[in-house]
Length: 194
Length: 185
Length: 178
Image (cartoon, rainbow over all chains, first blue to last red; front, side, top):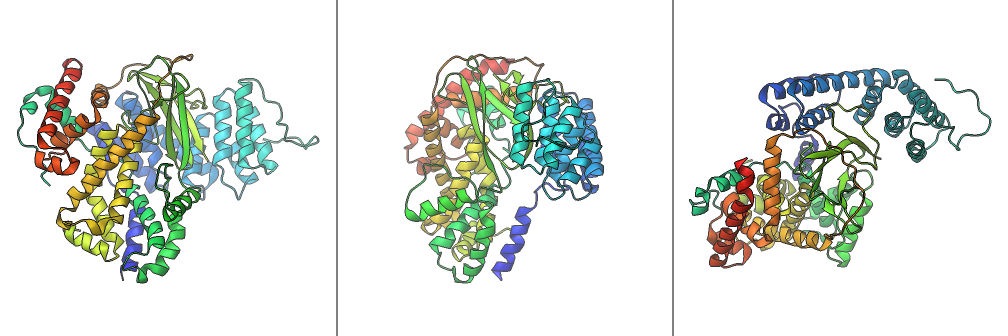
């Protein structure tokens, strides 16, 4: 009997404690009106099957960095939009971590088509690392088209995650220089499509 | 256990009243702390076989496998009896799949304090101070982070924000501050 | 779940881990707060608290007054914090010089500054003074309870609390007046 109760309790413990209730972190750190507005966005995201935690963290980031209430709410709404578009690009099976990474990529100016292409090249593997690397390359100054091409090349070749990470290191070393093809690619290849 | 302080001279002081008021506020800790403690307890129960363990035996054996994924890191200065050593090994082996150790460092030799704020600590400047390390003006901290993407930044001397030169920058800064991104795989 | 500590302890000893989960939930916030202020950061506080929970479970049969489980657990927490603190002190090293490029930003909310200053001031107190101050004024213990918990005598504890209070006042008066 206590085994069954223990299983029930384990499930309960596994649930995030603040799911669907007013998040205390928001009420502690933001003024009531702002906390309420942010909470509405978070709830709306969750109802739509999107992760709410990145939105809460965005609000807390703004609070700590001393942003105005308007700016905080705008940033949270903006991220909500990016998460929605990320889900449109990757589909309903994408994990929360993939959606969050994809939202960051869209924010960085990458195209949804690039994300869809990446997904089609890696249908059975998590996409967090390739999307993260793609985003980071652009953030470091690599032109989006170039970064996209390099990452898709690796995906097409079925390379493992640590080679994507190595790509990012090359990109950081190169700075804003256009990236050459990574040394991993075979000599003769069909033209890259984007 | 009594919950209220009797009236004491020192609390007549306004500054101390404010300090105590601040210190009494709730402190947010990781909500999975309890669960991780329970997981460790279960893993050890499997070896130590507590008194009423018969009916738990089969379930614990199965749960130890699942619970193994959730066990936290132990530190090197734990006891070294055979039972403890194997419990430690189990925990460390089970680390894969959950929180990974991540070290952050910042060179700031002229600073008197450095903290990190980010998605992993609710952007709380009080939660995660760095400490000075041995090699000269470098500040470090060890975190345990689940796989994912984290935005973060350093707070220098309680006044200034600084990006992590060892990590990529966030592609866009929502709030005008320098923010870095960390990917844990 | 409104079972008494004694009832939950008894059930735990009978093999019911959900009862122990209940005990942990009952005390985690309060003792977590103490550990946080004693150790100065969330990571170490969580580790100390988690360790304390595990140790308390292992030695639960030796808790002679299960109706006072909280006080018994708190003593374990206080000791665990001392151990963790000693290890932190040992790991700290001081040195000098490297290039530093740190751009400035704008203003920060004052609330954090005040909390930060308090944390800094606490950090400067000798560990026994800090411990005594927290136990007395934040945890609201009587001196007799503090003596039982720490093993120190009451006059010594009163002295530590007084010294801690004086030092905190000194460190924070100028900050607060802002």
